Structure formats: structure tokens, C-alpha cells
Amino acid sequence: MRKLKLILKKIYQFHMDMDITHLWVVLILFPIFLDTISTIPLIVYKITDTVLFFIELDVLIVLLVKSFYKINKRQLVFIGLCVIIFLFNIAIFKNFSFFMSNIRSLLLNLFIPTWIMLGESRLIKKSKDFFIRLEMPLFVLIIINGIIRIYEHDLYNIWFAYYVYTNIAISLYKAIIYKKKPSYLIASFLIGFQLLSGSRAPLIYILLLAFILAFPGLKKRWKKLRRKIKIVLLLPAIVIIALCINYQAIAKSLDTALMKQGKIVRIIHIAAKGELFTSARSDLIYKPLIEDIENNILLGNGVGADRIYLCEIQNNKKCTDNEARGSYSHNLILEIVYSFGLFGIAMLLVLIVKFILSSKYDRSYFILIAFIGVVPLLMSFSFLSYFYFWLFVSILFSNEVLD
Image: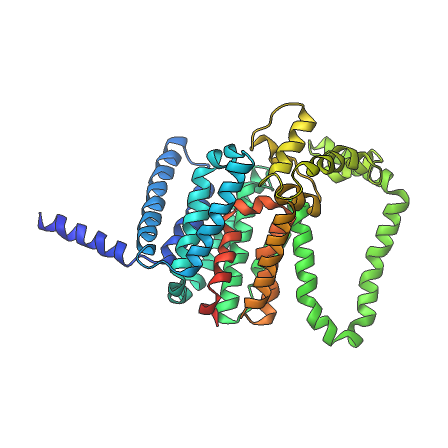
């Protein structure tokens, strides 16, 4: 009986000492661990998944209860935004299925973590050593997962994208806190795998980020680097001109080679058919969206509405959220207006202005924060349901701890 009391006392003390560090473990390392061991027998995987889920739930509940001891203004602002989004999507847009089909993900990966982080932002200071230790084990897990993906001939996987953004997030966090540069080794590895994956959005993201980060240094050394830059820019220019002159023939060769391997790259396939500069894309995607925008120009149609609408037009049937994931407008302005209307654009501008005016970060890292927190959102509003975007929103609203 005494031993049992002692065990219960230790468990209670552990819960009382629990802080934001444990939240990072359950929300980042557990999914990575599960996906890395996904090749084990199914029964073992299910048992492990169940155990880890209850541990995750335990940590979240304890931190959530502790966060209500003292509610601050940042939490009130956040809960207000959540209520507005919830009402808009259910009461106005009738988009109830989005919340019901993603309720566990929204609660565990979006609402509760952000609420806790906003409430316990002061504890971030205590987690410095933890983030230093976390980066390398995470990198090892990424390598292991990468090897598995190569072996299974599946280079692009949604969980791998999570690993990439997680590691960039941790590297960034370390850079902000310690004024140190993220690991070049890890950055090179991540960029290499993104190149292998052939995914367009991460490639654009990485190239733009690299250019903007390099720009201040290029500006200072412009005279010395001018000749080298001209040479570097001349080669891609020649390739682009060659592609424009005879892009269809090149695209057909690439498309044929890819199709023999059972792969279709959408942009190459369109170019091979000679529709890269025609109105086919406009007729199929832009035109129906523009016509439907007029019905809800002020408030929009809700999160991810453009995907569902396009999926239904292209397939002539009602689409679920999962079926509509591959359909989107491929146009930033259209997606913003269709999803959130003029009100959404105004709200987004207010957030960006607030971000710029309230930032107390070192300016060299401000660019990194802006890209990791804002650029993915601008690429697609589906990032609103991702934990990593809200992580940076929470850091933004609690940036006094990073002075």
C-alpha cells in the first residue's frame, strides 16, 4: 500500500511539473516515431498507437487544465478568433462536415496546443536545452524514414513533409533563441529530398527563401559578385528560352519517360499536350470559381471551399473533404477571395501588419519567421488546419519572451 501511494505521488508530481516541453514531445516526436515503426506487425503498431494516443491525451488534458488557472489576453484573442471561424463555417457557410471529419485533428493539433502555448509562453524560456538536444535525434529519424521511403519507392509522403517543416521549425526556434544559424547539413538534406520528391510548392518555397535570405549579403557585395551573378542568371535564361521555343517536344519526352515509370507530373503533362499557355486551365479552374465568387463576395465560402467546389465540377458528384484534397485553384488571389471573401483579405492584411509592427525579433530572423509562418498559408489556406502554422502564430503573440 505504501509503494502504491509512493507511485501515485510520483505520478502526481510529474503531472504538476509538466510544461510545454512535454507538449512538443507528444505532438512532434510521437507521430514521427509511429510512422518510422510503421513496418512492424500490425497488432504491435496498433497497441503502440493506442498507448501513445492516451499519453498524448493525458499531457494535453493536464496542460489544458493548468492553463485555465490564469487566462491571459492572448488566449482570449485566440478563443475569439476560433469562435468567429467556427460560426462562419457552420452557421453561415453550412460547412459542418469539415469540422466533424477533422474534429480530433483540430482539437489535438490546433486548438489545445495553441491555447496552452499562449498560456504558458513564459515556460518556453525553460526549454532551451531541450530544443538543442531535440534537433539531432529528429534528424536521425528523418534519415531513417528517408531510407525506408527510398526502399519502398515512395519518396513523397505527407508525413515526410511534416518532418521537414518540424525540423525547420525547431532549427528556426533555436536560431531565434540562441542567435545561431540553422544546421547547413540538415538544410542540405531536406532540400535534397524535396528536389527528389518533385513537389512544386516546397521547391518554390525553398528557392524564394534562399534568395531572400541571401539578398542582404548580395546587396553588400554587389560589385564583387555582379559578374558571377550575371553568369549564374544567364544559364537559366538560356534554358528558359530554349524551353519556350520548343517546350512541347521536351515536355513530351519527359512525360513519356515518367509515364513508363507509372508517374504523371501535372505541369509536364499539360505542357506535353500543348496547353501550357492556352485557356484550358482557365476554363476548367478559374472561370467556374470566378463565376461562383459573386454569390459570396463579402464573406467567402469557408475554409477549403474552393477544393470541394472544383472537385464537384470536375467529377460531377458530391465530394468529401478527403476526395477534394487534390483539387485547388492554383491561384492565390482566387483562393483567398473564394474561401474568405473581402472580409478574409482585410483580416489577413491586419494580421500581417500586426506581425510587422509587433515583431521584436532580430531582423535577420524576421524573414525566416515570415516565410515559415506566412508563406505556406499564402500557398494554400489548407495550412489553417496544420499545427505548425498555429505554432508560429502563438510565438508571434508571445514574442516578449524572445527579446
